[in-house]
Image 1 (spheres, helix red, strand yellow):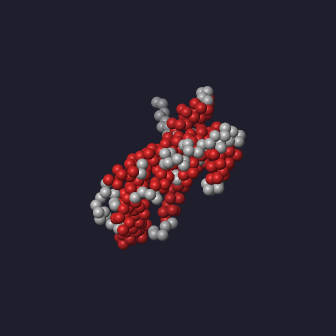
Image 2 (image 1 turned 90 degrees about the horizontal axis):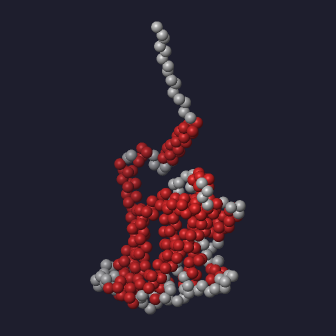
Image 3 (image 1 turned 180 degrees about the vertical axis):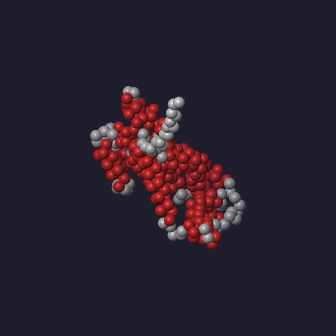
Amino acid sequence: MSDTRAVVLAPEAPSAQSRRREARRQARHDREAALAERTLLSAAERARPRTRLTLTALAVIVLAFLAVIAVGPVLWLAKSAVSTTNDTVSQPFALWPSGIQWENLAEAWTRIDIGQYLLNTVWVAGGNWFFGLLVALTGGYVLAILRPKYAKFLEGAVLATLFIPGVISLVSLYLTVLSLPLIQVNLVNTYWAVWLPASAHAFNVLLMRNFFAQLPSEVFEAAKVDGAGAMTVFRRIVLPMSKPIIGVVSLLTLVGAWKEFMWPLLVLPDPKLQPLSVGLYKVSSSAEISLLMAGMFISVIIPIVLFLVFQRQFLRSAGQSGAIKG
């Protein structure tokens, strides 16, 4: 009769990678627990009904105060846009003593020529967005992925421009626009005078560079093995993976172009080319206050509506822009 031997398999020892992962998880848990204890109020104190009620009341007061600061000026502008000039001057906080004047919006559109200024603003913002995104994408791609020998020097030069106030370079930039080097072309009274300086935005280039640096390098190495060139990698790999940061940079560029005032005032003296920010300033001395307020409300409400429509996409993009790890 043959012996039957039971074979007992010992549990497999955890690998080094799993042990490191568990150690990192435990360290993160310990840090979170330590941070939770390092507060003005302990968990036991927060559990008291009076403490919870006080904290809730403070939170409501702070949020209400922030809401008044953020939304109050817009609401007052909306009220003034459909009020008479006399009501705005004599009773600025009264709710329409003479009734709501909806015709102010239509008169501002025609008499102040808000429609033309709005179209000019769209042209300025669209050009700034296209050229700014082009420079940011290509610049970030060169600094983070192509990495030429002079990448460190170029990155330092781009970073150094952030420490130069815009007022200092205003005169030299204007002289450059008056006579473009090499080709000696005057760009004043053309949208190129706004688009080209706005496209060289160091912050957007560095933002793109930081995002591209977080993309998995294995993808680019595999593309090089398959024989893909730099432009193919940029077009078929980098751009599809960069949708989150493209959304963030696009919104920042469009909002910045919409509210830009000083530079368009200098390089676009022709009223037929001026955006809303400059046009409203030019007519402020001659237009009625009611029509001016209506024009300002139109100029403000459009970017607010655009943000409210696309806020979900923007917030998702802003959250994902730093979520990709190499």
